[in-house]
Image (cartoon, rainbow, N blue to C red; front, top):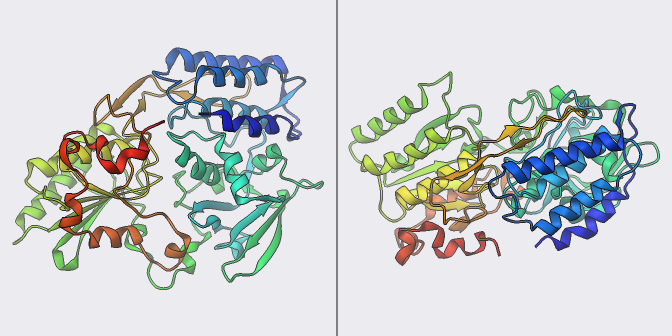
Length: 463
């Protein structure tokens, strides 16, 4: 399953690495790699569920062959590549502001859309680049860039690895140095197609980086959350931004659409919000509001596209409240909007909604598994200061036989830059236009009891 990565991995070992004043000795770097490897083998519930043991050992053979000093940048990426073989969101490692080589970041944010890689937010001196599509970096086309970055992703499945790499790694100058995507001056040559259709080449200059804290200061690592004051693609949208982007700073909120016939509820994080009622009190008040209406909404749309996780103990019971309050469930009555940023407790919640309400899922594949690996705890590394985490148990809201890599949408609506820039929410439109007749076909036969077996989920099971 992983044979296709060997060519790229072999290539990466030969790439020039960033020259840093602080280095680890080869023995120190290997000791940390062995600690990670042994911890994953001893702690992870199923570390080889996707990647076979031979591939793990081949990766370690490469790390054991390293010679000479190892820079902190190389150590981060080498360990990230090793940990990514777990194909698990919670087997994770991130650099911090004190990690040598990562003290600064380009004041840029990137996102992968159906059409390619786009610059979605920027500060000086790159603000005019917002909305531009990246056509190449140091001569490497978009497909090559996505494939190379995916090798380092902490993600539950290959689809999420692609978008993760673009979102979390392209902002770091260290990434370009490690990949060898720099010129002789250490700068990055990036070819772009601007929002106006003009082809330009820009040079990202390492001397104008922003601090790590400034670039990551949005309070969230999600691809659609940006530092205050930056120019973003929302500045290019004519009129108001779509509803799903208007209150991303709130953990939960709701409103009525279509004259009250549709309840739209956005659950960005199943955790208490200091500016709202506690989450359970808020949800109870929402159900009380629904019950007090002269007529109940014909459709309830629950939007978890920004849900990066939180407390599963909050998320799972909430889904069954729709059932016990008689708020649902007829075909098409319940719709869940999900996507690549629906991970951890977010993806477990979608799985719970499937079982409790037979919800129709609209959007993209969830970024996380519905039955995933949790209880992630830090692993102490003695030299690099990196803070990897490895999970300790498996848990979900469906069933232990649910081996899906993700929850596939019943109605697939990919994220398209064309829609975003037009201020259009194509997934919400599809949810509103879904007919009861269409909805009846998504849970045929026994799949009503075992949602992970319904036809739309065929591609979500590992081969």
